Amino acid sequence: MKVPLLDLTAQYKTIRWQVRSAIDRVCESQVFILGPEVTACERDIASFCGAGHAIGVSSGTDALLVALMAAGVAPGDEVITSPFTFFATAGVIARLGARPVFVDIEAENFNLDPDAIESRLTRRTKAILPVHLFGRCAAMEPILEIAAKHGLTVIEDAAQSIGARNSHGHAAGTIGDLGCFSFFPSKNLGAFGDAGMVVTQNAKLARACACYAFTAANRNITTSRSAVIFVSMRSRQPFCASSSAICPCGPPGDAKTPRVTASCSITAGSRPT
Ligand SMILES: Cc1ncc(COP(=O)(O)O)c(C=O)c1O
Image (cartoon, rainbow, N blue to C red; front, side, top):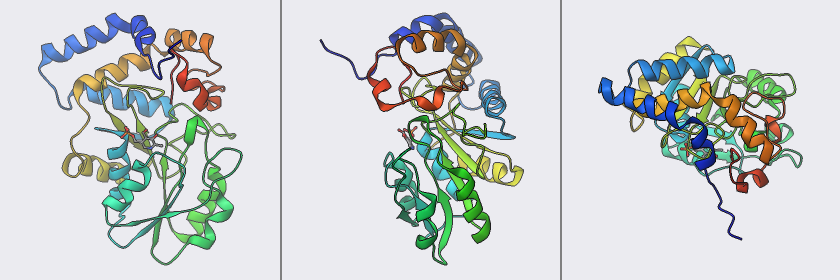
C-alpha cells in the first residue's frame, strides 16, 4: 500500500467553499499584495497566540531573516542555534554574513540544551535562536535568563509550532523577543503556497520587521495566501476534529498539540509538521 507523505485533500474538502470564496474575494478586489485580507490575517494570528504585533512575510525563512535583521544581526556577529532543524534556521544567519554557532540538543525534546549555551558565548554573540521542533517547545526560561544576563536578543523559530504552548502555558513564538512562523502548506497551519509571519510584543521591533519585510525580504505575504490562512484559522475546529480522529495530535492551541510527532506527518489527513 502506498502511503503518501502528505495528503491535504481531506482537509481541503472540509473548507473548500470558504477557501474558494476567500480567493474570489481577492480576485474581485484586485488587491494582491497587502490590503485588508493581510491585516485581518495578521490580527487573527496575533490574537491567537497573544502577541501584540504580527507582520506577514512570504515564508518562514523570510520571517527568520526579517527577525534577525530587526535584532540588528550583522556581518561578523554570532548567533547561537540548534544543529537539529531545517536548514533555513542556520541558512538565514549565514545569509546576513553572521556565523551560526551550534549548541547541542536535549535528548528529551531534541531542542537547544540551555546548559550548553554559556560556554559557546563570545563577545560577538548577538542573539539566541532556539527552535521549537515538532510542536515541542524548547526550554525557554533558562534561555531567557542567559539572554538577559548577556544582553542578547531571543528569536524563536516556531515554524513548526504555531499553537503549541510550553509547560507554563506560554504560546510558542511569544516567549522570546521575536517569534517566527511558517505557513508552508504542510505545516500545522498551511497557506495557499509559501507564507510566514513574525510576532513580537515590542512595538519598536515590530516597526523594524515591517520595514525589512518590505525592503529586504523577497516580498510581503500575498493577499490570497493571507485569505486562505484566515479561513483555516476560523475553521480549525472541524478541521482538527477530523485530524485528531486519525492521529493523536490536537488542534492548534489544544493542550495535546505539543505531542505532534514526526510519525504523525505520514498519516493522510493529519496536519503534519
Ligand atoms: C524549523 C524550521 N524553520 C524554518 C523553516 C522555513 O520555513 P519556510 O519553508 O516557510 O520558509 C522550516 C520549514 O520547514 C522549519 O521546519
